[in-house]
Length: 277
Image (cartoon, rainbow, N blue to C red; front, side, top):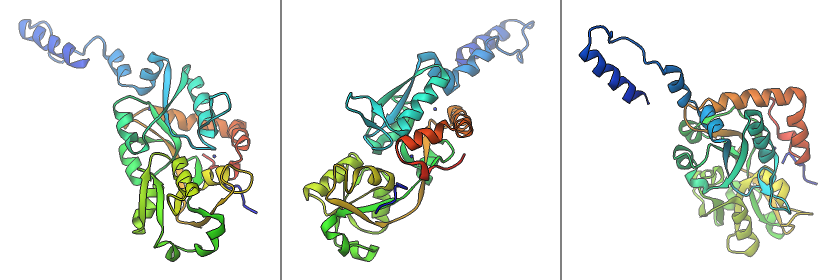
């Protein structure tokens, strides 16, 4: 039995003001520009998102957090929460699949407004993004063919294996820290496919994904998980300095209080992994 623990114009005005000040003693140099309030709004990520009417969410295909249903609609705990958060801002959520290794670049270039996809709050992520509070527990675990699981029950037994890992992921970081051989792939789902096809000996993926996609009753019934490599927490990333992170923290807190977050988590069987914010 497996437990399903495994749920983001001042310069022209100033120049004009300075030129006017040079030509007239009646205009003090300390006079504030008339449009200060509008300029402050221009620096708000929330106002930026509201002005364009969409919250663009960077994701990968990652059940049970972000994945498509039979109608091609993005669903999952993160997808549903992103839709609800966008609605609370008066905008629509738009989902864009990204190269996970380039997530910070995608944010900074404004291709996306946030990264909301079971993202581990590593030191690297927290230094590159304005992150929400942690909302979900997770771990990186080893995936191997079920008929070989008894051979790989501790880290010492993994040394001769070639791993498939998502590029730029916490799983890749764990494999590199152990000095193991690995092949980076685009997504965690690709890593599972590598093991299932025999191209790689093993994979390291998120425990929540493993609970949804690996083992009896799943699309990868012949795979199983063995060694847990770490413990970690998920958060949502926005552009550095974004006021959307604080807004999301407030949204989550209200959702915990009214039960909507727990209800969504139960839909995707990740309620045991929730962190009370």
